[in-house]
Image (tube, rainbow, N blue to C red; front, side, top):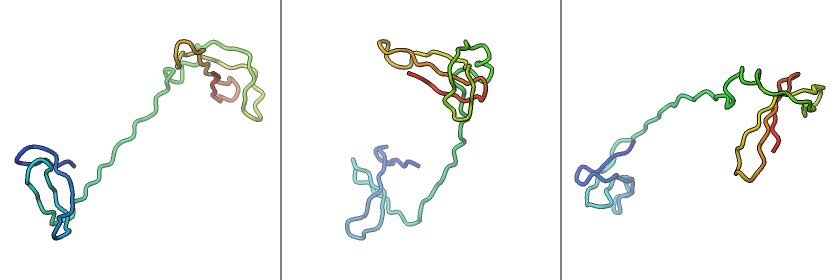
Length: 111
């Protein structure tokens, strides 16, 4: 929660009073100050967003091109994977290939 000075509308900062040592809200541009007498506490819970599939959801891999490549997952003998190529780095760098194993569903990328 932000509090603002009623005199000049600048933000108030928390500081200790030089003589008493008690906390106060003070304006740094004018002489306004407000002694804090009661504890102030607030908490806000934020709802987490669901992660979106950057390739357009579960059906996006169905129409992807397929290639013969060995899956890097141990125990998977899959030899075919769907792939997309995306330019995620600068234009003079090669495209990044994203793969999904057609056997186990593992995803990996190669630069």
